[in-house]
Image (cartoon, helix red, strand yellow):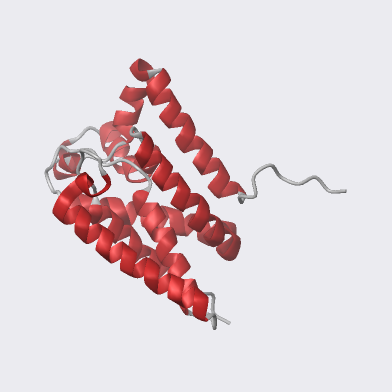
Length: 207
C-alpha cells in the first residue's frame, strides 16, 4: 500500500509555508538575531527613491527585498490569515499550473505587489512585509480559472471572491487595520497589485 503524505499540499506551497512559519518563529524566539535579517528582507519605499545612490551590495539587497519581503510576518493574525489563503488557493494553482508556471505566478505577483506599494508610498519609510500580494495573486488566478470553466458554482465562487477583494481593500483603504481589529496600516495597494498581476499571469493554457 503506497504511503500517504502527512499534508495533502503540493511541495512548493508546503515548503514556502514552512519557511514563513520558521521565520515567524525565529523573530519571536531569537529576536536579536532574526530582526536584523528580517529588516533587510522588508521593502522600504524610501530605499527605492535613493536606489541609484546606494553601494552595489545595498542596491542588490533592496532589489532582492522585492521577493523576500513576502516571507516575513510578525503579527500572528497576519501569518495565520496569509497561510490560510495561501494553502487553499496556492495549492489549487500549483496543481493546475505546474512547477514552472506556478513559480512565475508567485514571483510575478510578489514583485508586482511590492512595486505598486513602492509607487503608491514613494519615499515612505514604512516597511512592507507579508505574503498578501502573492496570496491575492493566487486568488486572482483561481478566479480566472473558475470563470473559464462551465461550472456555475465555481463561477459564483469566483465572482464572490472578486467582490470580497474589492470590498475588503476599500475598507482597508478607509479604515486601515481597524477593519479586522489590528492596530496597523494595511498595504491594500499591494493587494491590488498582486491581484491584477494574478489575473494576467493566471491566463488559462491555450488548447
